[in-house]
Structure formats: structure tokens, C-alpha cells
Image (cartoon, rainbow, N blue to C red):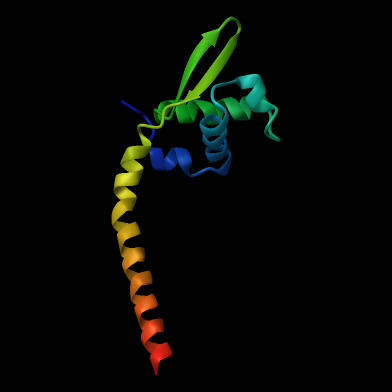
Length: 106
């Protein structure tokens, strides 16, 4: 079971960028990830640990390297939590569109 919740894990822009990189480009060793950020490697390692504790990344050893991969399943909880808010804003936007169409007729 994750020690860190997904909301905490994605609260930081650097961690969101790590997730984006892993999503778009696939697994990365720590050294390759570190090249993409303007931070010291220990700081990046702390971000990776937090993502791992939240269950959002997996780590495997490949020789002397640690390779990280995205594990997106925990994001389902986030999507489930956000769904009612998406419906709320969609309904509001439809109401606005209806109002504007009615106002144009006047």
C-alpha cells in the first residue's frame, strides 16, 4: 500500500514533469532523468522516492543503474475524484453557452 497519497505526489511541478517524461518517453535511468532537470541528483532522487512511495513509479535495477517506469494505475483514484468537478464545470459551460445563444437572439 502506498505511503504517500497521489495528491501529495503530484503537487510538485518537478514530479509532474518526471511523470510526463516517463509517460511520453518510457522508462528512464536516474542519470537520464537528472539531465532533464536543473537540480542536484539527491533532490531528484527524493522526488523519485516520493513518487515510488505513492505507487506512481516502479524502480528496477539494470546493472548499476536504477531505471524508473510509470505506473499510472494510482491516477485512477485521482480521475475518480475529479470526475464530479469535471461534470460541474461542463454543466456550467453548457449553461453559459445557452445563455449566450439566448442573448444573441435578443
